Length: 473
Image (cartoon, rainbow, N blue to C red; front, side):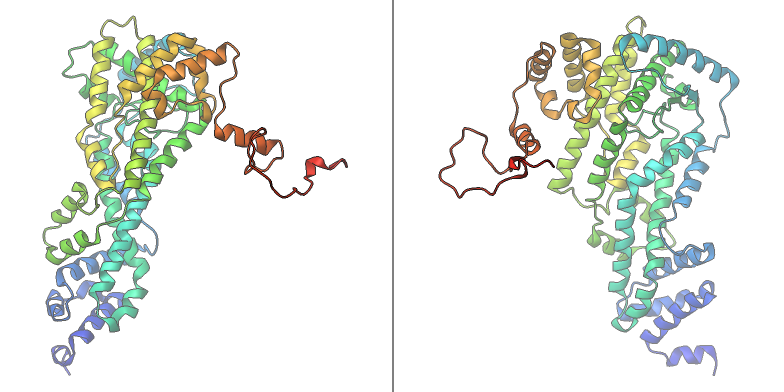
């Protein structure tokens, strides 16, 4: 019997099963689009199925069988970053080395936090992608996983009941395809971001390894093009700011994990809007994949933030503001003798407040804004602290996590200053309920007990505690 005769005798369900078998039997490249058109009788969207099959075929050809293809993101990002083929010239490297050397001397006068163990350096756009992509991957993975899960669920809902077994069997590969679609888009965003950032700490979060300070000469020229400020002053200011950021994260080694954990706390709450995904699938035209790209870039697949996410984002914004406020104040003091320092500082603050196109695309892609909205207020707090207790007292607040100023301190710097001045005079600060509970716990008391002197009324006698036992422990 001819192939066409066999197809005419098959039910739509059998035709769908045959397509799946062709795909998993290695004949996916020969799937006839006309066969897909016949699936509409079963409520399956042919366009979506064709697109999915094409990506599944690509996954088979590449040997990918699990996880998300982050290597795809890296290749895409490096392709964009290295498009101009330019590297760092010897002249650029020399100029930046000189700027870093003088900036380090000035910075040591403005902070007690020690110098870096490794020398700062000039970095290409491709080098920046290589160094920072592991962090982007960590931040984006919750969203990529959510998109992969939603794609798998949408396919299951599209397939007829009798075909659920086959679709279920392909679930791992479908997750790979959905995640890889997202990874490819992330690579494009990171690649474009590599053409905007000026230094390692430019985005605010710790993208570079602790203790690494870098400047991207290719982007440095673009940053200063319209400012009408001499290049040597620009380089000196940016170098000082980058060194301050790198010194802080090297000194407070707990700070990196603190920032990343707050970012991931926010990202874990992101879920794909399945209604938007299904609506996109119902009208998706495989001949125009730009629609899917636009949906990812615009954030159309991400629902509105929940209250918990808004709270997590507020905590992150306050943390970033506290960090960048300190960097701002230290850089301001270190570059006080620089004629154009105030103009450059204002340009940097505006740039951080607005962000470039790639940073805005990142916000849409992962639903995360890395804006230190309260940086000016945080900087005012750090200035007040410096005036009250000096540079050493200010920088000591980064020695331990529980010493770092909080959002409440940004709101009320006077209260923070009062506490620090009292501590400097040797006066014990008033303890709060948590301090009391911790003290009772260390003393061997039940933390549910009231402090001594508080009458809770009659109660049953307690069993002797270990602390009451005269025998040695």
